[in-house]
Length: 276
Image 1 (cartoon, one colour):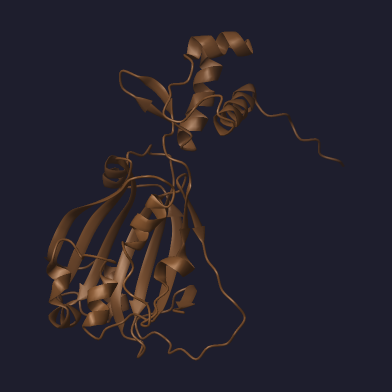
Image 2: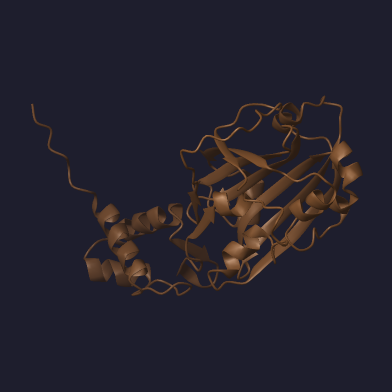
């Protein structure tokens, strides 16, 4: 028996039409959409149908509801996080002029900003304890921050460092890691990260993540556990990134040249990136 697919519901078709108008600039970024009444009149449907279409666009991150303004087209374009470029290291090169996250944003003509929420000692979550090979009673240094582009939040990032690493690199306790981020003082302390792994999951945001990143409860986020290792395979840093799925494209690169790199001692991860 041949199965015939049913046509899309009206609200889904309208959502696609509005999304196409956003893409071609008919509805510019940061500008309110026409009212639901006007859209209902244009498409010849009920306001309930338009409301359902707007609901799809809110869930996909194409629009946001602003109190006192209405439904507004998303301000930021999609951002590419090129993991190979972001975490490549080369001791022969000078320190980068800015943090990798800032370079991604400024390269698109947007203004980057980083707000530090906390820098201090804490008890890490279980996943960090496992990767670092420490006990539940051990404490670590955490650096919690939020990245912005043109005043819009783009990412939450919490980095955890073993205290023996912090003892060798006390600059990690400074609120601002300085030029090039934390990897520059680590390298200066003889702790250059040369190997990275990442696990990426997709999930809905927590209440805190909804509030900090200005997300709808139904929108998804990338939750990335990034680990940096020394040449000997010792973990230097575990960084947990939370990134709105509608804002980011994650790009991973690799080649087929075999390289001899040590296996990590803190656990197995899926995306392996030796530094170039």
